[in-house]
Image (cartoon, rainbow, N blue to C red; front, side, top):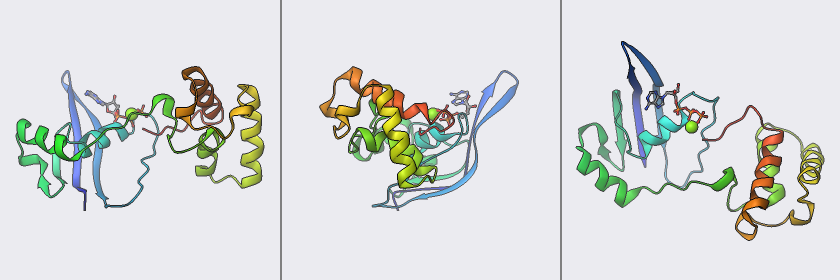
Length: 165
Ligand SMILES: Nc1ncnc2c1ncn2[C@@H]1O[C@H](COP(=O)(O)OP(=O)(O)OP(=O)(O)O)[C@@H](O)[C@H]1O
Ligand SMILES: [Mg+2]
């Protein structure tokens, strides 16, 4: 087990009220699994990642990361845990590094449950729109900043309500 949240919540003080950034959550992060965290804007995805990444403490509940009880660590111990175990990869323009142009653009459609033929049609249209058809097999790192940006725009075109991170 890489990390476990047991009835963890996160609240922030806002004036005399409070904002619930993460509602009471049970969650396990297993080794060797690819985990996607999906949800509407403001639902607490970044807060969950920040907890898993040992950047913030939970307000209530118990958080374990790499077998350590995060609640009980001081800031210095927490920083050491982060340094030794956790890497944050911020993906420019939200493109996934191992996926090529058409895979990146089609990824949200796949997650929405669309069928292959439907996805290919929408992806072709989206690529056409941003003039990236000739780079359909290119990986993000093989493209210029502007080209990556156009792929990201094509991807968002049919994804206006879905956020990843
Ligand atoms: N440091 C903070 N202080 C006050 N409120 C916060 C803080 N961080 C997050 N929130 C609030 O907690 C809620 C969850 O925020 P969070 O950033 O986790 O959402 P998210 O799911 O990542 O959203 P998005 O998809 O827009 O990135 C939001 O209402 C946000 O305004
Ligand atoms: Mg976020």
